[in-house]
Each structure stands twice: as structure tokens, then as C-alpha cells.
Length: 566
Image (cartoon, rainbow, N blue to C red):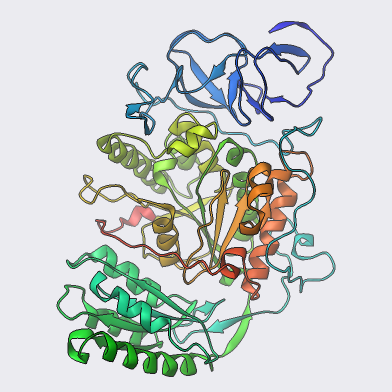
């Protein structure tokens, strides 16, 4: 940095917290450009892509680096002010980054040391004060689904900060088990991969019957797994599901009778077919389509009942994250979560493998000290699991998008949780027992018997839905088109440039925060509005485009301890 200048910041480089050792590029910056930051001129040493970071001051080898006030790693070489901070000179204190080009990003770095406690991350309302950066989209965003605003002229965002906004007459689907749904699907469920094609052909039949849509889910494995049994049972008895047709080959190990009995106990329509007993593909498909027609007619008559915020279960996940995720979409979802929790909703955040470095913050927000210890232990378990696998939950796209270490990525994942007290930790297929905020632990217990905890975002979306989520809030920086069966997915786009390119797939443009066109509170209120509109029946972008992704594999979880719930 060079001499004094007027107390101005021109907006090209952003300091996100007073304690930060790095500055984030709000637009691409060429080598040699001089940028005014808080009255001081910073000369950028190398071409710096949008979203990447440079050193705010000279750093020596081994020095801790902070972003958003949180430690994101330590330097592995001396770094001058204005020099790019990334894989070549910054390393995690926990785990090496994803393998890139056959070499670990941390190979040239010092060995990761003991975990370093980090300061509570801070998320500014409008980090890009000043000129709008070039190369990114401007303008106000249009929300993807038609906005239903039964609460009055001000919309749902006009309600109180305590989440008590009047959401008007939102009608749900009453289930015999006392739960309420916002969709009315019929599932065709294959119980082994050998039955997948037949299930798909059944679902692709005549859909002229009113009453709901037909969707396909299932488990591919031939061998038994308690986790898969629990998740499929939770999906078939989900409040957005009115009935299920189970399709079995006939010789797999999945406990079909137990699943059918569980669906019957919930009061939902259920039938089953065994391909080997029916006489093969054609006969099973024909019979299956007859049963689907019966099931659709049955669920068409389900009673409609009023639905409140307190009836909702809302999950959140991030996918295709970049550095803008931390600044815009994720904390905006956190604001909407705070409001939903205040209104009595059950809200679920997950990705324990992407909360590494945030364990003490989780502990401090727990409703009880016992729960706090359990939350921290779950993140430590995730770090050990990924260490055994050989890399953190950070992919090449994250690195290209400006994220360098798992701690840096974790700041964004943590931001989605908002600021409410954490009421418990749950596992896939477990329902939150009451209104509040819950952490979903998706990392299996024990050693990596079945490989990666989740090989893609779809598996985590399915696990959130298996915990009862009516709606999924999916944040993305680099862009994702993933939707889901059973529960609608609302896409919240963090990066204004990504929104410009992929607006057909996005519901909310949170990148307006980065451009200074909206605050976190405003976008958080927009997300809240869209949750209510979706519960009212408005289609999200992924629903309108026909996305029905699904994936389920093997995992191992032990029973939850009493300390997991406050």
C-alpha cells in the first residue's frame, strides 16, 4: 500500500471486515491497476479475477489470513500487499484442497497444523458501495415463480421482524397422520436398480387423471441398508406425498413389506408389484399404470386445510459455490431462516463437511451445553472423515470461483444458518421434533465404508427432504440447475454475472446485494415471500422446467444420542 488519500473506496476491492488481511475483487482487475481502498491506494500485482482475493498488507510465511473476520488458512510463502492470495500461497489449517490436475493444491504448502479458532464471521449489508463493477449484470431481478401475495399490498415482507407476518390463506394438503403438504405427488418407487426402468415406464404412462403428479424415486442397491430403508420410508410418508406404488424385482434384499406397512400406517395409499411375479416388463408396466390411475384418483380427493409458517419445514443447501456465495445468497438465506424460525417453522441446514472451522460458533449458538458439544463433535467427525478420504469438500469449480480453503468455503455455508438458537442435530430420515433451527449431519459414522459422504448435491437435497422439508432453498454462485422430486427447490443466485447467464434457472437474484441494489434484509424478505408463494402452489423455476433429480446410496449412521436435541 502507498501513501494517504481521501477517505474513499472506489468499490473494485472490498474489505469485508475491519480485521481482514485480504481484499475481494468486485470486478476483474488487471495487473498494475491502482485501487483506492479506505483512503489508501493498493497496486494489484497480477491479473485478479472477479471474486478472488489479494493481500491487504504484507504477509509473512505461516501467517494466519482472515476474511469476514474469520481465519481461512495460513500463508505458505511471503505475500506482498496487492498480491493474489490463492492455492500457490494459502493453505488450509485443516485439510488439503481438492486434487486439481493430479496434484493437491496443498502439496507445496506447509503441513496443516492444529485447528485454529476463528472469529465470528461478519456479513455486511452492501459490500459494493460505490460504482457498479463492470462485467456483471445490473438491474432489478424478477422472481422466477409468480408471486402470490395474499398477505396484503406489502406482501409477506411487510410483516414483523419476529416472523409474525400474516401470510394469508395458504391451503395445504391434509394427511391422515396429521401433517400438511404443499404438493400432492404419487411416487413410483423402485426397490432395486433392476426395477428402475419398469418404474420409469409406469410413471411415463397416461397422466390425464387429476389429483397430482407421478414421480420416480428408489434405491439401487441389492443388499440391505438401514439408512436407505429409513430414507425411503421417510420419502414415501412425506407430507408432499399422497401415495406410493412400490416396484420390486423380487429377489433383492430391500424390506418391501416393512416399507409398505409404514406407508399404510401413515394413512396414505400404497400398492406393490413384483416383476418376477407379474411376468416381466410389459405385464408389470401395464398393471402399474392401472394402479397409478387408481392412486391418482384416490389422492385427488384429499382435504385442503389452512397452512401457517409454523407448519413448514424448510431446508437449505449450497451448490456450485463461489466467493459471492458468502457475500450475498447465503447470508440472505440466513435472514429468511431467522424469520421463518421466529414464525415457528422448522429450518434445517446441513453440510457438516463444509462447516469445518465453524465448530465453536455452532457450539456457542446451541440451546444447551450438551448440544453444543455434540454440534462441535459432528464437525470434528466430518473433518476426520474427509482427512481419511484425502481431501476436503471443495471442488475445482469452487477454486476457480475464488474459494481457496475449506475454512473459506465454510464461512458461506455457515451463513445460511442465520443467527437463531440451534435446537438440535438430526440425521437423514429424522424429523425435527418442533419449531426451531436444526443441523443435519450428512457425514456417516465410522470410516468411509461407502466412499464420499455425498457424491453430489442431489443426495443432500434428498436427505433434507427425508427430514420433512417442504421446500429447499438452494444457493449457488457459479450456477446449478438441480431440482428435485417431492419438494420444490428455490434457486438463490449469489453471483450477478451467473444470474445474467442463467436467469431461466434462477428464482432469486441475490447478486443485487453485491451491486448495491438491495440489502440482505430485502433479499431475505424476498426469499421468505417466495417460500410462502411456493407453499401456495406457485411453481419454482426447477419445477416449471421439469427437474426431478433423485439419488440415494448406502450410508451408516448410529442412533442419535439424547444430547442431540435440546
